[in-house]
Image 1: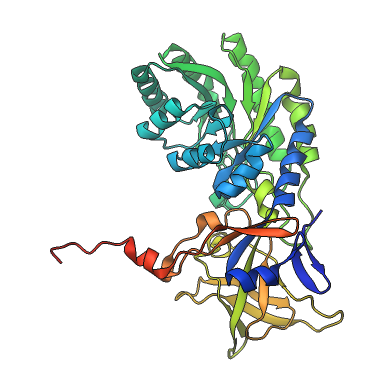
Image 2 (image 1 turned 90 degrees about the vertical axis):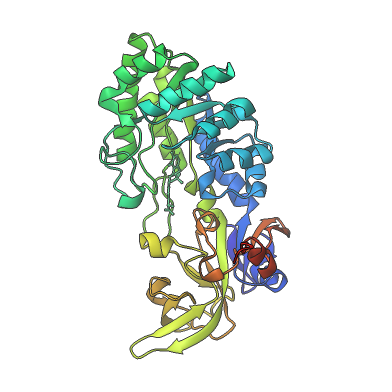
Length: 421
Ligand code: LLP
């Protein structure tokens, strides 16, 4: 169910009118729905039941502490990719034994942090990383639970910047070399092999690439067990896509994805871990912005809004589509206008949509980018010295600012002018 709906002509987040939040916190801002986060997490746990499983939220998609606590309190684990994310997960109350550590470039410092703070497993991506982790764990007198991320050389059929499972990508070790790398891992001190990890990409809109990858992982599980390794867990990554444009065909549902997991690896007696990010957070968030000017260009009209590519970079970076809707519901039958929707930043890439048909807008009109919960706030920057925008969490009929807009003083005070200047 969609928790961003029009009621009495106004767009609501659950039971709060987005225009009321705008009046209170100013624009632009991100707004997240607790009910959507909760429901999407539960869709995965339901889809995987009765297999033993842990849904580890890929917090790179949305890492505000209040969101992490919402999910962590439901029992979610976290997939972290940096020391900072690890500390955020812990600060939100997620215990170490529900945190998996992914990423190709974990530093020794990050390894120490997670080993001493408690970690469910490291998903190791290379032989040098294996050796470094062995050294760090041994020096601490600890044992690091590990999986090795295998690269199955599968085409995820997604945008090239977010495909990770082909041999030309930097991720994992080639599945063809898995046996020798597992043998090395088993021989190294301070490491304990607990399973296998795979992740082939993000925003996948078909199940077939997952199927190919998971069948390879099932084969590998049998081979590695025959070699004497204990394969207790399979981390099957994230990547299930979401509908960004309302008119497009919807990608497969978590239930279908769960059935696929059961079909491909369900008989191996392994605990299943998955790392969904976008499907949990994407449609749980909107970005609300206000029209600054409507500029009539020579051959088109520009809607110049107060959000920009520094706030939501996905259209500029991946040519991503986000539906843009007015906060005031258009009258039925109202003829739509066509705009290029752009931000105030000084480059032409600061364009959210070209020749987009939408309800006519005027100066001061409020609008919302849908499906902006994932890879929105987390990828934002202060480019053009624009303050990071606030994040708001709604639950039922109340809302709270979960990250405030910094003041300009706070921004300026982070810089230091050397005394010799
Ligand atoms: N696990 C690993 C190891 C990953 O690298 C990722 C995403 C995920 C899980 C979660 O994937 P998801 O379920 O969210 O698709 N900034 C891009 C997406 C980058 C995805 C990176 N890795 C975007 O805005 O589309």
